[in-house]
Length: 531
Image 1 (cartoon, rainbow, N blue to C red):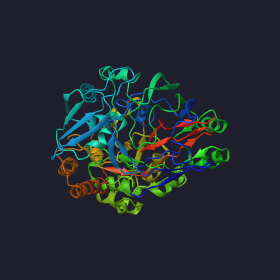
Image 2: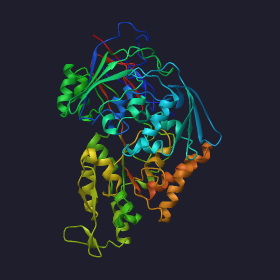
Image 3: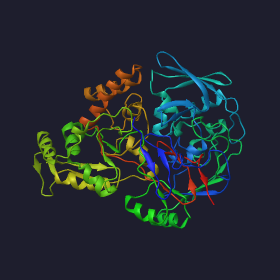
Image 4: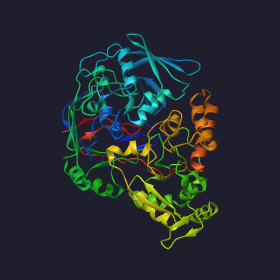
C-alpha cells in the first residue's frame, strides 16, 4: 500500500498515516528516550459528551477515550498492515481458521491491580455477547467461544472460519477489561471501566469532562511503537465544548491542546495562529455510507434505490461540506482498505438516469407538490440523520420526485432504532481494515443487517451467502474475489449509498507533540507536552 505522510504546519514533522502508524510528530528530531518529557495535563476538546467511557456500549467513544484505557490481544501495525503481539505474545491459527489460540503475557495487570489471565479474556468475550452490547463489537465476536486452556493460554473457537478475526480483536471496542468490569451491567460500564492501558480512568462527568491519569507501572506497549514504559503525559482531560468556535479560539490561546475534527474553513486561520494542522488522516475502513432499508416495499425495488444513488452529486457535497478536501466514494470501502477496487461507474451523478429508473419502476405520476405517486401512495422516505450531506441530498432527491423527511432519533436511541427498520435511509461509517466488516454490518445470518435483508428474497439471500463465504475462505486471492463480488452488489444494487471517503484533520496546540494515529484512534501513549 502506498503510504501518505502528514505534514504539520509550524514545525517539521512527518507521519505515515495511510492506515498508518505514525505520530503527528513522531519522526521528528526529538529523542525516543525520556528527556524532560514527563508530566503535564493535555486538554482534548470534544464537541459533545460521549455518553460514557465504554466502547462495548458506545460507538463514538472507542476512538478516543477507550483506546487510552484498554489494550488489545494483538496490534495492527498500520505501516506494515501486519498483526503484532500486544497482550498476547504469540498465537496459532488452525488450518480451517476456526480456532485461534493466544499465549498471554504473564506480567500484565489491570488498573484495579488484578492480573490478565485466560479466564479474564473468556469473561470479556462472553460479556460482549450479552444483550444490549453495541452492534459492532457484538458482531465482531458473534458466536465465539473461549476456552481457558491454562492460566495464560486462551483458545477462541469460532462458529465458522473467519480469515479476518485478528482484525476484529485488534479494535478498541474489543479491548480487554478487568474481570470486575466484564461482570458489570452495561449501564455501569458506561460510567467506569478498568483496563490494562497506559492511562486509568479518574472520572467521567456527563456533558462536562473525562479525566484520565497515567499508569506508572505500564510496560507492555507493542514493540513497534517507539516508546516503552509509562506514558509521558501525566493527565488527559477530555472537555466537552459544544461550540466549534470556542474550540478554535481555545486552540489559538493554548487552553486546548488537541481537537480531532477541524473544519477546512478554519485551517488557514489556525495555522496563522501557530496551531499545527495535519493533512487529512484517512482510515482503513469504509466510506461514509447510508444503508437503505430494503424491507420497505418502496425500496424493495432496486431501481428506486439506484435512482437515489444516481441523484447524488458527490463532488458537490465534497466541495460544499469539506471544501473538496475529501474524496467522493468509489466503493463501499475507502481507498486505504486493502480490499478497495474502483466501482465508481455505479456512483456517477446522473439525475436523468434516476428519472428513467423511477419511471421504469412505475413511479410515472407526479403530484402537484412535485413528488411522485404510485397506486395512490407518495414516494416518501424517512431519513435518520440531519447533516449538511443529507440536506443536500434531500434537495437533489426532491428534484427527481422523491420526498425525504429528515427525522433523526435521539443519539442514545439511534443505533437500536436504526436496526429495527424504522428508518428508510440511515447512516454508518466504520474504521476496520478487513473485509469482514461487510458481514458484521450487512450480514443477516451473523451481522447487524443494516439494510434489513430478507432471507426469503433470493437476491438478499445470495448477498448474505457471499458475506458468510468470504469469512470462511482462507485463500487470499479467492477471498478477495468473493469480497469484490459482495461489494459490487452492495454498491451496484444500492443496498447502501456510499458518499464520501472522509478523513479527519487534527489540530495540535503549540505544546503537544507526537500523538500517534492508528486508523482513526488517537494514541496519547507516545505524546508529550513541551513547556
